[in-house]
Structure formats: structure tokens, C-alpha cells
Amino acid sequence: MPDCVAGLARNLDWASGFYGSGIGNERIENLLGVTPGDSTQSELLSVAGEIANKKIDLLLVHVAEGSPDDTESTVEFRALKGAGLLGDHTAIIHGAAFASDDFNQMRTAGAALIWSPRSNLDLYGSTTNVASAFRQGVTIAIAPDWSPTGSKNMLGELQFASRLNHEQLSGLFSDRELFEMATAIPARIARIDDKVGSLKPGLFADLFVVAGDPSDPFAALAKARPGDIQLVLVGGTPVYGAEKLLSQFKVRTETLEVCNTRMMLNSAALPAGRFSDVENRLKSALNKYKLELASLEECPQ
Ligand SMILES: [Zn+2]
Image (cartoon, rainbow, N blue to C red; front, side, top):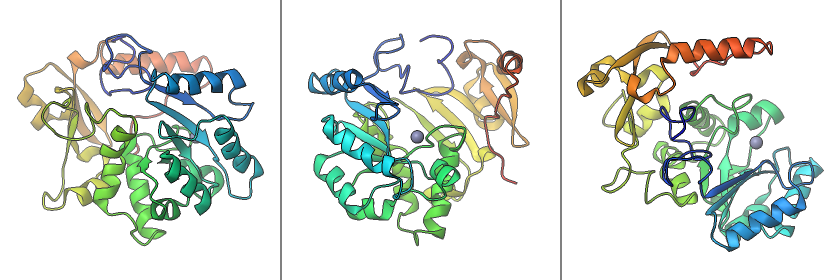
């Protein structure tokens, strides 16, 4: 695996590690959209061909990322269908402008929905009508869209969704359902549920340990703060955690502060050198463009 992506997370876009050690072997395609500004006709045709020839398992495409009164958003869904890309190998990111009939069409075609509430609310003041999608039987997963308007990571997005679920959706989803929308369900959507997404013999040991009430682990996760993540394993390798747990693995560690909590990284999972050095190199590189490196975590106020 190339140094720049190996290590702290398994990345499905570039280097999941499922298909050899190089990059670009993944069985998914990402498109920013389907209208001419985002994708050319030949790009759309080539993706449709890759699905038909079973070269890829999934197309991830941002569609209808606006309010229901935004005509461009509704035109996009028509364009997706026109390109022959509404099918069971497609996951629509957003669908924020969709009404129940659109969700019905998605369900009939077997297309999945990726819900990114935080980014939607930040940009448009409203988010996907997931209650309607849920009632129509659409498969729904959660993810943070992108970092400028979405959460910094899955934990942050899960908590945002959980709060919204209680404040605006009268608890439509259980904490367990929200957890599955971030784990087993997206694994099924990407057809990698024979590799990750649940804790089962034969699957990669990608797992984490969170502090909280053990009698209600899904509620504990919904309430967890960055400092509550006690241990992270990727493919059975411990990469991050609290000293108490990570030190049991007898690996060389580097410490870092996460929301005023002292945490540890496994140095062997850091092929590009010490994390603090990488951080400094990135900071000075971004400095030239007058940009700042965002923090890894979002700490509660
Ligand atoms: Zn998006």
C-alpha cells in the first residue's frame, strides 16, 4: 500500500487493501454529479459499461443536493435515469430534493441512499426527507459528504444524525439502526460485506472500542466524544487508542492529544514517519497557499 494512504483508516476510494497493495483497484466509481458540469456523456457511458461488465460493484454519485424547489436538483435525477444509471449498483449521495415518488423509484430500482445531514443543513438549511425514504423502503447509509461542510469523521456525522433524529424526526431510527447505517449497511451497499461491516469470523478485524454504558452500547456510541474512542483496529492491527488498551499490544507508540485527552498511535501504522512530523510538514506546505490544516477531531464545547 502506498505510504500516503496506508495506516490509520481503510479507504474505500483509493486503497482498501482488498484488491492487492496498489491504488486504483477498487470496485467503485465516484462521480460528483450527472449533469454536464460534473460528468461528460462519455464518462457516464463508461461507468454504465463498467457496471454492465461487472468491472465495478458500485457507483457513488452526488445527486439532487439542494432544496426541493431547486430545479437543477430535480433535473439531475432525470439525467441519472436517462444515463441508465438508476439501478442496484448505484448509491445516490444526498437526494435532498427528492419527494416520495423519487424514493419509490429508487427502491424499485434497488438504488441506495447515502444521507449526509450535516453538510445539507450547513449548505441548504434542510436535509433529505429520510422519513419518506425509510417509509418507501430505500436502503439508507450515513456518511459525512466532504469535510468543508460535513463532519470531520463518521463519529461526528453519526452524532449529528442522532441529534437530528431526536430533535426533528421523533426518534424515527433507533440508535442501533443509526449504527448499522454507518457499518453493516454501507458494507452491503458496496458489496464488501464479505470483508468488513460486521464482527464475524472470516472478516477483516476492523473494529473499535468505545467507553460508555455496556448495557446500551448503541446509545453509548451515539453519545460518545472523540476522547471516548478507546481502541481502533484496522485489519487486526491496533492503530490508535487509549494508553491502557494500546499498551497491551506491546507496540511502539506516539502520543497525541485528542480533545484534551492523551491518546496513542501505533508507530508501525505510520509509514510516513511520526504523526507530529507529518502534521508539521502538511502545515508548512499548506501555509504557502495561506491554508490551514484542519484538526482531526471536533471537540465538544
Ligand atoms: Zn455532496
